[in-house]
Image (cartoon, rainbow, N blue to C red; front, side):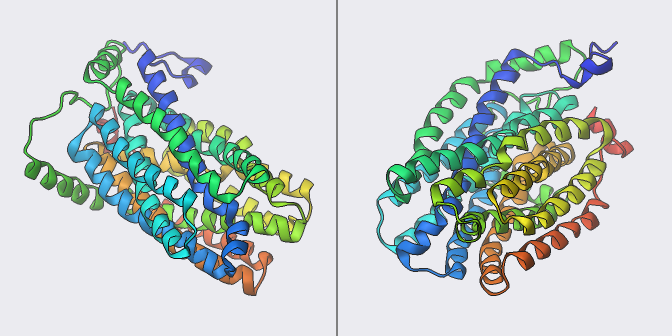
Length: 438
């Protein structure tokens, strides 16, 4: 008989202490990724002034970051599957951290626009590879039955980072300049990478799996010890896992959904501080803090909807979240004061990041052996491709039509996500996937 609790307590999962520790450490990693993605949009007004750029040119600069994300998500996602399932993923994450940290430090000292453009690409490669490897890592240290909760809780690092990042950035800008904010990344990322390597040892995952089986649940990854394969075999394995992921319906649909959701999100955050400084009339340091308001409430939706999708299904959760996002984005046309900005952005935070853990869980459900590759495709193509075009398109709309049409267009685009959502295969509903899920 299952030892899983019943009643209300079943919504608070039981897990091995090491699973909880890994959840905390990987959540800190996500917080760092979120801060990194807030760096350029938050300091965008200062960069536009410093280099005498238009909003369209600023959007292109943001697009370059996401061009690197495509490369990083795909290559490092496949690397995560082929060179280290389970404990080995921590080393894959370290590679991504190294690339991103070096790029960030050089950015802080560059005075050339051409160099800044190149560094946005290389930094994007590093951060693009961090997320798929990290999400897969936390999924493998928890039982399958509570995967949605684990990924949702793990992703609270995004809203916290989206709030904490602008606050820290605003403080630095008030005391120094936009260049110094890029030094945040290595200061946060390197200690986290070291902690993950110390924690992610085969014997620790074996202890976790023994506990999971003893409590009548299912480990997410059975292979703990690394296979002794030649480099050529591992490289071939990279492409096999990518091919397996690409032909899976949930992965293909998640790429489309991720593109739509992140196109709207990137378009909003790219010029939010510009709207607050230009239309609301607050200084950049204050605008940076307000721009992070969605992070205050974002953690609620992450945990609630990630856990809810374990019980009510991935598809139904995504439909509700999509409608909620469209409504809150359309409401941003009314941001004309500090008070309204806070209210609307706090409401947006309840749904802003919530679809992602549900989509991530749907991919891990469908392709557990190629999860990192699947997430790499979703994040690399979905996030990267959307970011490449979102910045320039948003810059043109804002520059030529204004913020009202900007937000109405994004709200309408968001509703289109309901179409691919209707085709997602849900393991809580589909009998074949249900057997694998159990």
